[in-house]
Amino acid sequence: MQKEISIVVSPSDAAQPIIVQQIALQEAGIAAKNCTGFAVVKKSLDARGRNPKFLLQCKIWVDESPQNSHPKIDYPSVYGKASVIVIGAGPAGLFCALRLIELGLQPIIIERGKDVRTRRRDLAVLNKEGILNEDSNYCFGEGGAGTYSDGKLYTRSGKRGNINRILQIFHQFGASENILVDAHPHIGTNKLPNIITAMRQQIIDCGGEVLFETRLLDILIKENKVVGITTNKGTIDATDVVLATGHSAPDIYEMLHNKSILLEAKPLAIGVRVEHPQSFIDAAQYHCTIRSEYLPPASYSLVQQVDGRGVFSFCMCPGGIIATASTQQEALVVNGWSPSKRNNPYANSGMVVAIDPAEMKGFEKYGALAAMHYQHAIEQKAYTSGGGKFVAPAQRITDFVKGRTSNALPNCSYVPGVQSANLQEVLPKIIFQSLQKGFLEFNKKLKGYVQQDAIVVATESRTSAPVRIPRDADTLQHLQIKGLYPCGEGAGYAGGIVSAGMDGEKVALAVYQNKMNNQ
Image (cartoon, rainbow, N blue to C red):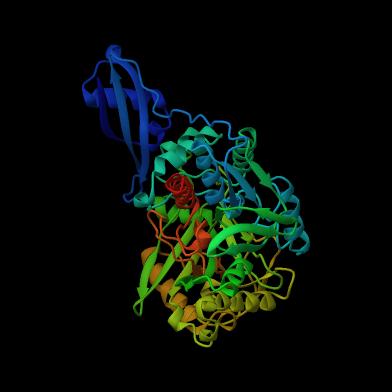
């Protein structure tokens, strides 16, 4: 017999598995001698009251052997099988490739960047010397943007696919079992490289290929069908190409636009990174002076309607670091990440404003690429305002809400450094003023949010792709170009690691089904 029960425990009790089991058995009315298996299957923190509690969903086995709820996937050999080109080795591309192998197809991954370990050297040069490699950075390279920008696995995209399956695959390749249990799972930038490497090795062991430092230049089309691709290293014949290039590849959008492939400008969310001392966030959220050792570094989620426009937090990183996410010279983008322990002294979050393409005045001439050019123009202003070498323009948040330049800036985790600037000269008026009002409203919800020790760093502009490549979102049976499969964040059909992975799997299944239907 199996029984599931939900219990509420203190943080200290939650840290002791034996005590958790005792409490669950007692509340379920099951004697310890009859319990043949026990597991916590879901764990969430309720910090709304003065005394935070953990909510645990537990499974108890009585007089029967526990079942393995996380069976491993066996990946078959696909040597000599029909091949599929996958452009991009981010989560969409990797999960697509693994699913293709399950379905008996051979993936050939084309990745413009470097392998996950070599990529680290380029990140070090970017941070220390302000020198950007446009093909190897926080966005481009093995594992995509997620590898070195946190590894958050929380998503609300349950209708897009099987979230648990994506988490289980991450676990199979080395992620902690905690990601299968935690309500807001997180791997950590320090843990992801080994997991991504294991995925790549599995693909290669099964007969797939991964070609690094190989940039897509053109997709060859004849009679509305894909016949191959051209890269910086030559031409490859192909009938099926999965386009999983991520949200930061304007050259790909330009290439598709020039080939008269239908594109659509998307709404964007653009703003800044705001960083506070983690101790302040802990005290505000946990109602304490010093955070208990049994509680994780606190986070927050804030949203406010300002004059009918959404202002909201994005990708909040407790115990985190602000990083350079630029992919183009003289264009500054910042993002945030946290290590697995989230033990840095600062907490940062994107604070962004929703804006529609129709509001991007002066960019209408770019048509479907209007949002992309609007985004880039802001990033260029940020770079110039920082003075070059990816130094970021910044203000104290107390000065930001008053529209004045800061005389001095607080300490900040951003390694290339920050330069005092008035961000109303960087951000479009509609974004700057919405953030000003939003911050004052957030200060009512999280008292002390607007404080001297909080810094605003520009710009957070890559929350999503600026372009959507229209497709039949569910079955992908009706494609603009036969054999060309838009996939993941870069195509406008995902918004994070897990949703991108789910979309990669969905596209792999569509490729397989279309091949079967055409036999």
